[in-house]
Length: 283
Image (cartoon, rainbow, N blue to C red; front, side, top):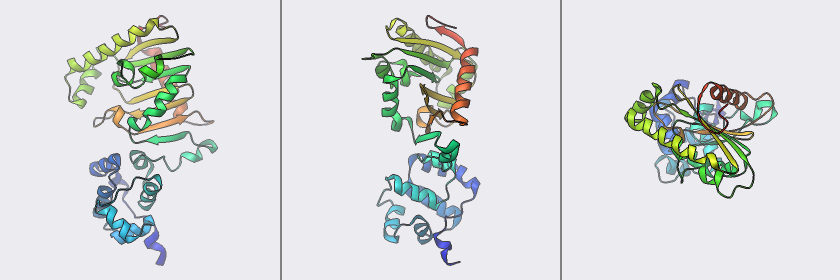
C-alpha cells in the first residue's frame, strides 16, 4: 500500500532482547541500533528514514555516524519508527509509551538512562525530604562516603528534620558471593565494602536533625530504590549491570498506581524482616 513506507518498521519482539541491541539502547548509539535493526529486518535506509520522518540526507548522516541524535524529539522519532516496546524505550532513556494512561496521569513521571542523568533531581529531593528510604547493596556511592551522591544534600545545611531508613545487603549473607561473582569481585572484598558503609552510616546517629536507621537483608539484590516522601526512584540490579548504571524510573504516587504502591509495600516488608544494625530506634 502507498502509505506503508511511512509505517513503523516491523521488528520481531524477541529481537529487542538481543544483547547487541540492548547495549545500543543503553548507550543511545542510534547508528548502531539502526544498523542492527536493518540487519534484523532488511529495511532499507530510505524505509527507516521515511518511518522516522527524517530527510534521506540527514538520516544517512545519522546512519553513518556523521551526525548524532541527541534531542528528545529525535529520539522519540526513532523509537516511533521502530515501534519500540516499553522495555526498550526505558533502556533508550524514554518514558514508556503507556505511562500517561495510568489513573489519568503518569505514575512514571520521568525515565533516566542511568543514575547520573538523575543526579541533580535526586540531590534536590534529598535536601528537603522529611522521609527518605534507600534500598541498595553497599550504598557507598549513594550515602556511605563523604562525597557520595546523597550524603551532602541530606546532612549539610539542613533546616528541617529527616527520617532516613537504609537497607543494605547483609555482609554475611550467601547472596554476597553471588553478587560478587556478577561484579567480578571477591566475596571478601565485596563484604568489606558493605561493612564500611554500615560503619559510616553508624557515624550519623548523633546528627541533630537526621535520624538514620540501618538494617540488612539477606536476599539476592534485585531492586535499587531511593524514595523521598511521595517520590520514588527505581532501578534494578542484574547479572550484567550495577544498579547505578541501569535505567531509572521516577515514580510518583498515583491513584490506582501499581509500581509506587507495590515497591513501597515491598520496602516496608523488607524493613520489617531485616536485621536492624544501627539507629537509636531499631524497631
